[in-house]
Amino acid sequence: MENYALKNKYFLFYTILFLMYCNLFVGWAFQNLKIFGLPINEIVLMLILFSLNIFRTLRNLTLIINILPFLLWLIYGLSLVVIGYLQHGIWALRDGVHIIDSLYFFAGFYLLSNEKYYTIFFKHIKYFIIIAVIYIFFLPFKNIIQDILPQINSAQGSHASISLFNFSSLNTTWIWLAFYIIINRDEFNHRLIYSDVISFLFFTTTVVVFSQRMIYLSIFISFIFLFIFKRDSSKKFLIYIPIFIIMLSIFPLLNIEILNRVGSITSISFMLDHIMSTFGETASGNTLSSTGTVELRLFWLIQVIDNSFESIATIFFGKGFGLPLIEYTGTNFTVYREPHNGYLTIYARMGFIGFFMWILAQAIFFKTWLKYYKFCKTNNFNDKKNKLLGMIFFIIIVLSTALANSAFEQTWLASMYYILWGVILRMCFNIKLDLSKKLISN
Image (cartoon, rainbow, N blue to C red; front, side):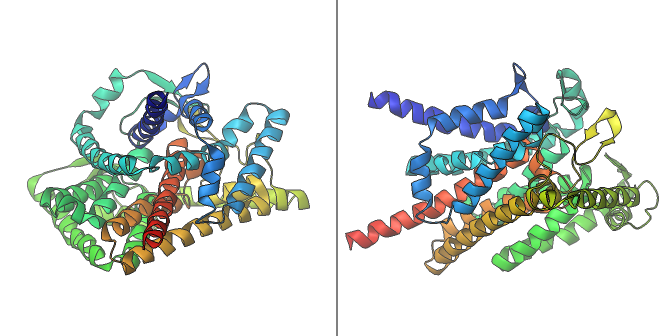
């Protein structure tokens, strides 16, 4: 009987790890894979939740954190989703995917439930890095790979193949792993190929090949965070900038032209133009200006805020789930239902009450992380300190991305966001547990 229970625990652990691999590296495509019309992500999530002892998890969480705001937000959100489903049908489940995916938090807390799982989990982060490098070398063949793979259609009407090179999923993965490597140099024994070359490769690939303005924003905000909490590592990041400029300056001399999603890069001026276009400046050459995009997003922002003031009820309780916040059809007949701002979506759907509870829950999570990060720093627990910092960077990147994207409505981002919050808080719980054992033994 014990053997059977142990096998079930291992199966649960590796199932969560499998979901992490899929969401980190397949992203949009995996989000839209379904069995009998139901997303695989959510099917597996329900199986995981049925396998967990939620009451024990909550009891453990209360030892390190005030979990009540998160629980109230979760219960309130699920109630709105159910009401929306009864009133508007299946679209309420799609619109409420952020609420549903937040349940991954409990799966993340389980991942480090013993010392063996802890070791295996951080060993797999090294595998994440290896796979991320392999993806880069496959980039020249991405069109061939995408042509071979079958077509996956999203509920919004976008006709795209299952892509191993989805901008949103891979960009977030590369940026996170780049910062993780810089912070955890000791874990890789300061080997050049890991701590310097690979992290630079991840940053360069993300910026050059997949030029996106939300990438520049998330890297900038992440760097500020790195500068505050690990200044010596931020110096390493700054060294990359002149190397990057020199590398792009050499391209024209070697007649090297790189094609990316917005045109072709022939010089450093291309990148500068594109970065400036983020702020609405008129771009030159092949660089696409973001002015029209900015105007459209400002229109959505004003429209959503205006609609939220229709009544006292929508101000405090939101519009709920099932109805679109905006109505816009883009390329490939993609239908947009939310403005490109994750925070605005939370407010519009759940009102001031739901938004306040969510912000409060995130603030409590961060306060707990900071408390145990400082504890590790004070007591020279450098390995745990660096791992805590490395994990939090995924959170920072998603929160930055949400300023210019519906990040929490994308399962591949939301699921990883809440899994890693669970992992972080489990690390905090384990630190407190170890400390309590030492005090008792003394």
